Length: 303
Image (tube, rainbow, N blue to C red; front, side, top):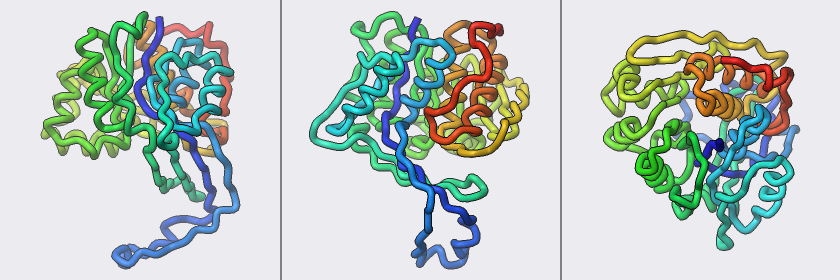
């Protein structure tokens, strides 16, 4: 069955700064910050968390259904999804704005500075999870328009569809009360280490306490793997060493796609997270969020 992926579709402009941000920004002068970075490397990719997650899940043999909104310039993205065999039945399009755009600059230490124009994403709540979206076994709330994240979580719950709450960079948009409601609606929660600290701070709950409200909570730790919390008990899932470190853009989304692949098949959460680490390692060794390939046969995967 299919996986419904609620999140953004965006065009990514990727810039490579050959120095270190820390050497260009004076901490004691942040109040008068005025800097410019020379970026010899520049490219444009298809991105957005819904598109990136769908790419990962499709590579593994899953059936992704992204639910997102494109703007007047979105025809190329629709063609891209179709060429990959990814359903566009839940992708809307509005003509009075642009598709979301991310401008991402990476330094030599893989630190990133991102500017994001939401564009059509802010109208993503016009897409609805109802009877017109059949055969969905599991879903995810990934970073999207604020209204869309709130409404889609409630719609998942009303439809009885288990889902992952992964607020990503959208987490700061929500109050502690709103985040607690998301957790109570969700089946699983995933955050990175920074987001996990913010989630705990805003809800007033420790990771162990949060994990007792859901079937499982995962904290990703980049190159250190991840932590899986189930009913207050923590399990460390080790990383998969990458062949090289080329581009971190989209690593988290590759991880999410693998997580959803396992959840849709009923795997234990630790095994889902382990596969996520494996996909993240493949992604970081390739440029762009949707250009990597598998180095194994997904048909041979077992939980």
